[in-house]
Image (cartoon, rainbow, N blue to C red):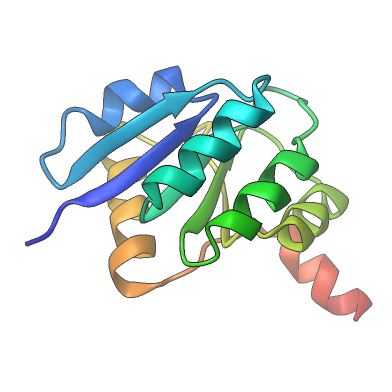
Length: 137
């Protein structure tokens, strides 16, 4: 079975999880504060999935995500966060996110399984606040 090629942005804790599973290959890991490097690496490597890890109450860099999605339209954009609001999830979706997961209470194996499911079966995950977004439509 082909390994899933991951680009990690702002994700040192997740890197330690994915290195423990042979199904993943981390092709690069960059920090979110270097927009040009992240965009160049994404364009050059064309990973299967781009994983961004948002910190506690951290505003997601939507400009970064949308620029990366422009150069990697086939890569799945997965956001891991510790909190969410309907507005944050909506903004992430507009920027190109394919999944938005709350990882605060997830075990490492659950994180790995979720990413594998997203990449192999194209299943998308979103927090409960997405229901609120659909009610507003």
